[in-house]
Length: 456
Image (cartoon, rainbow, N blue to C red; front, side, top):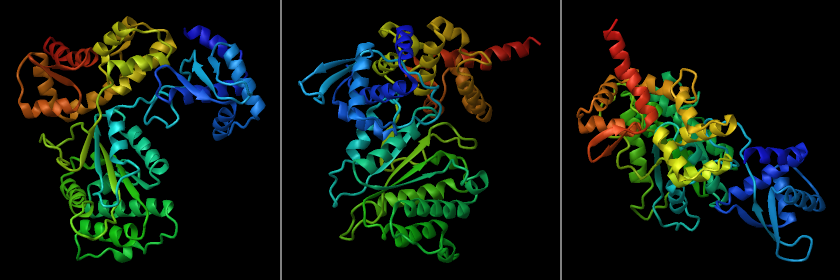
């Protein structure tokens, strides 16, 4: 399937390949499993213009005909006029981009919607009443589950569908270095400055006073932050607005700042975003994203954000979602191949994308994928190195996993923490490692290495 597709692409000039990619991405992103849309030549020309690929209407018509003649698409006419709307069916497509790393771009066909996408669209629906309390959303999941990608889509939805002014603050950015994350005043000050700067960029005529001149030593740091934002930023913006906060987990584990910082967010949700009087709400809606991996020196099993707002917990891809993805990568798979892949790596989005990309690009089968899985320079080396670092920093997690591998019991609180990492599942017989990849790696690290050391 992949070779014929590439042969067809080779019959297109470079600019025609770029134009076909725009068309294919548009069709796929309509979320129709049958890959078909109603599209006129003029609409296709508009799509190309949005990507700075301007063509005349007659040229757009010729391109569509050429794609049809090559078997890349099928055009089903619904009228006799040259620019009549036609049903276009995408007949052949294989993703030709680079390996996904980090957040998935808005125009990527590889992004897969999940339950969380439907939830945020309902929570932030455009017809929300002005007399409703403001939403506070928490997005959580392990590394590689798509938290930042979801935030990007929430921002796009809010700006384009709900006409919101949106500010984004990333606590894992260079502006919030390790020194700032350990100093409560520095953290609140930088947080306030970052929010202000983001809203100033998006709002006309917003000119707040110098933060230094308004930062009072007799006030708590949280009160300084709250008062400044309320008086000089939020009250001044008479438009619907939303604040998105990414990387909140980067302050978890720093006991000097974690509790006070999260308590301010909790207070905002309870006192500033809910209707408790006739006074109008001036606060923005809020969505935050954070990872659920463990943090050094944090041994509890209760999230510091427990019971704040609406929780969106990102789940693994379902087999049906993985089947759709395999089609995008040009793999003619059925459910037996999908089940074999999920037994190997689970449904973790980052691992699934990486596996399908390598299988497609390197013409691997599942047996070859497994053979390369835990090699030092293997396909999943970066994820396994990250996991190894977490185990080295959290000895109790490592001990708990070792007991599970040995079919021994562990405490419920420890099991909860390990579940939050996505490493174990619970069944009728207790806990087990979540997939073949992790079990193979953990056995080698926690059991085989011990045996080797004992034999030295």
